[in-house]
Amino acid sequence: MMSIIESLNWRYATKKFDSTKKLDEATVNTILEAGNLTASSYGLQPWKIIVVKNEDVRKQLVEHSWGQNQVVDASHLIVIARHSALSVDDVQAYIDNIVKTREIPEEAIADFKGMMVNTVSSINDQDKDVWVAKQAYIVLGNLLNACAELKVDSTPMEGFLPEKYDEVLGLAEHGLKSTVVLPIGYRAEDDVYQNLKKVRKPLSESVMYI
Image 1: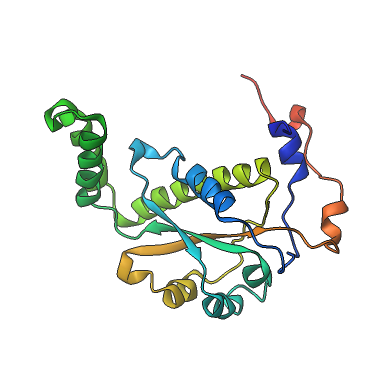
Image 2: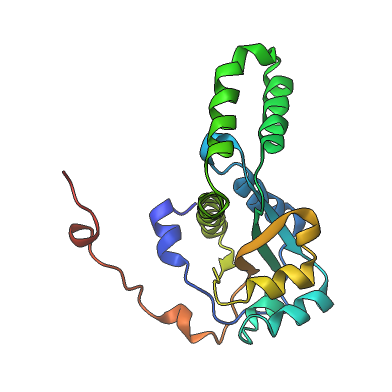
């Protein structure tokens, strides 16, 4: 198996996918599980990983993605959406999950619950939306790394119209907003970008020790 550094050097933002090659279910589930295990503030997971399987829907999304065909040619299309209105109810649902999973009384984590309730209740909607969107990008990083480890190609995309995605996918009724898009699959043999050397700053420039 390749090392994590070898895997990350192998990956690139795939510009052209082979539409005839499909990921098997086990591989996709591994990638999704990696996303689900992503760290988040307090552990709240204020996001949803959406797998768009419907081909007709994906074709609709291309026109809202600046014509980027990765959206329809990749084996799978993932949309990471954030909660549009994180609330105390979400905190309680998380608390209930902790109580059930760890088999402890709610009273044992009363202080933790109080801290989360205070945070969610005290920040304004705009700041809360920014905070939650940041959590979605942590998921993206984990998904990218998982794909690289499994030799699955991927393309993180911000070049799309979130409002149109929300409309096509019906996200508003689920209390969600699309944040970032990730087509995954296998690169086309004639995607010239796969042969380009990766360009990154040396560690001496990108890392600072204090």
